[in-house]
Length: 487
Ligand SMILES: [Zn+2]
Image (cartoon, rainbow, N blue to C red; front, side, top):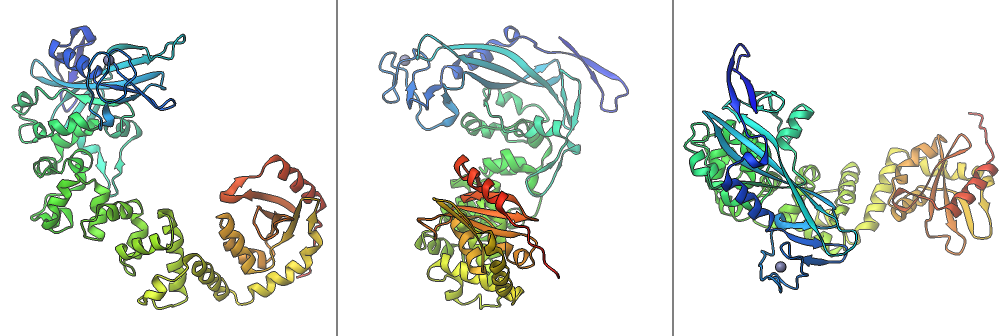
């Protein structure tokens, strides 16, 4: 197929590019590479928890097939295919020339695992050329649509996001859900090309064989981002392949990475990603589990770092049997302590005994601080709303009557009803608790009533109520008396 290619100013047609359009046309070594990869996959049925040999479909006990002796590498997820997907897509990339033009091809393999009469996986594959991109130092042309993507138009914002159009984003940075592979045997030739001459992309061969990458990894970063070459040279492959535009040219290691050069060997050992780097900037250390924790909750740690030592916090949370997600409650606790002007340099304040109890106490105090009469108001209103208490043989529904009751409900149900204190006190809405009569202390359903109607009824973690509860709540809703106040 011929593709018309315009020059950079769109003023003239440069040339016709002759590109491969069918799988049959592509060079033999590439076909062999594709076929070789295609047989490397280990088939896995997660439903039955069984691995199969992809060559003879025998069930595998270990990494060597008992029937055909084919051996598999155990660790790399890139080569494991889940057979319960009936259809699977694999992408193979390769660089090639058309006259003077450098073209990057994407061949797609569609694999079908479908055998209705047997539980043994059965594989058929279909190959076709999905895309061909013509490369220049400034832009990339999609040879099928003729669309030019200018690298300078791809604005990389600081927080790992791009100011891309949806289309550009998909093209350059989508993490392919399918497996992707690149033919690296011609990389030695590739770096003779002026565009890739100083890219160091040939040093990425092994990395690319074993990890997923994006189109940006192969084009935009090595062709356009100055730090790609430097990151690859330092063996910081993850940063090079996914975050090259985050790094500016600076005079020193410290200026580029925001951490001391003594961390380089650690960064290399774990081939850290950009979020681990940000965690490292926040709290320089070589504890990968701690840095991973910090990297998952970066904005929270950015706030907390003025008060706490992350390592101490991690140990404290383990001691208090808190999960990583409880970091949200911890932040809430510290914010409340700050509002109460407690001494945040005191270890007893920072790491209290019985965290959850202290958390409830402190958050309650903040509510009181913001409105001293709130508890009195809640109590007085509850005295009126007791008219609406509803009960049947099994359940009872009654109004919240204190800050303490709201906080207790909030903690038991993991919902945010604790923050309803002032709304309820100002009679903007009412909160009722539905409980089992046999266990009246144990939260079951939190109900919000507004203008005499039930507007929300939720179980733990804001889940919906079941049919039986729903019927009871409907009866309760019908029985509600609308109470008017003279203000
Ligand atoms: Zn086999």
